[in-house]
Amino acid sequence: MARGKTIHFLLTYDRSERRLVNMERFHNGKKAVDTYGEREREYADRPQIEVVLLGADSEDAIRVTHPVYFRTEPLSMERIADLPSIVAEAAAG
Image (cartoon, rainbow, N blue to C red; front, side, top):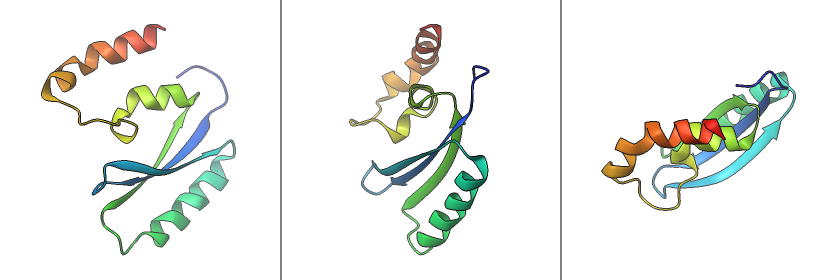
């Protein structure tokens, strides 16, 4: 991660529908953690909902490092095998 300001991304992902329900951005780490706790409590009775808090210098970075939350088609075994080279290419710019 570059030495810029960290952006906190709070993702709400529905595993059963394989789709991102919501993404919130925070520049304040405490607010991000507090909101994460709120979302965890909000979805506590829905095990198919995953709440994830990530930090990065850009949305592009989390799209590269955590593609499962952003994909629109199933990730085939061939694509999984190619993931290290995909990440390396994206990181190189």
